Amino acid sequence: MATTKSTRRHTSKSERQQARERAQERAQAALDRLGEGVREVYQSERWESWLRSLSRFYDYSLGNTILIAMQMPTATHVASFRSWKRDFNRYVKKGERGIEILVPMLVKDRGEDADEERRRLVGFRVGHVFDVSQTDGEPLPTLVDEVAGDVERFAAILDAVRTVSAYPVEFVANLPEGTNGFFRRGELIAIREGMSEGQTVKTALHELAHSRLHDGDPEGMPDRAMREVQAESVAYAVSAALGLDTSGYSFGYVASWAVGKTDEEMRACLQVVRDAAKAMVEDLQAAMAA
Image (cartoon, rainbow, N blue to C red; front, side):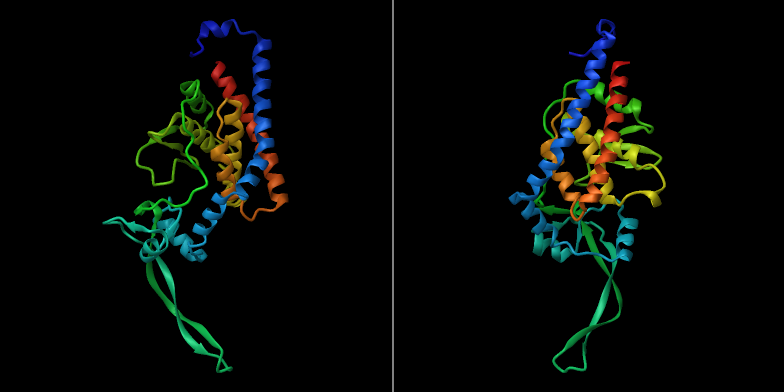
């Protein structure tokens, strides 16, 4: 049942302080559990399946990465027309326009040793790749499942997110496959329409974390992987403080972005996350009590 202004007047200052302390304790306990949960993901069969799938996506040069981002900023996993069919049993949708990249042209070149064969770059040609959102077929292996179920005080939490956000929070239809929301620096937070209450709250907190942590000069930002680890870790801790369990989602999400990060990087990340989660919990609680 929603809390009314009349019932709030009967809540003492001491009780409100105790509620804030319990929320912070839940957030801290969630962060303590996060590392263990991520390690469990690393040891799972699901992790191996996801890595096998990921290994089939080719690495692209910096130039091609820029070309892809310019043509489709929301692209997440790209592959050629043939590769989608051969490696993933997926098919490019009719009418989809390919993303242009530069493909190296190599010719065989004999070295001084007659048995040694090399390949020599003679130029580039234009090739095309397609994002997963442009395809249909068998689902890709994933580490995360959407957060299901209803959320107590759902409307109050979303109102609080809007209140504490420095930018408008908007619900958007027809986001690309695999995109539940995004933060556009200096403009807005967008959330996919039609998701469960649990996934909607989790996504709102994730993008709110981005807006607080990653709204400055891009030159001074951590790389994209670390930004995602930070935002998801904050969202997980704040979700726990609000009584929402997103561990099934967050552990896999953090693990997928934390690949290759050193222990030192992750320790530094944890301090950022602790401070950001604490501040966000306090601000959301204050907004919900107003």
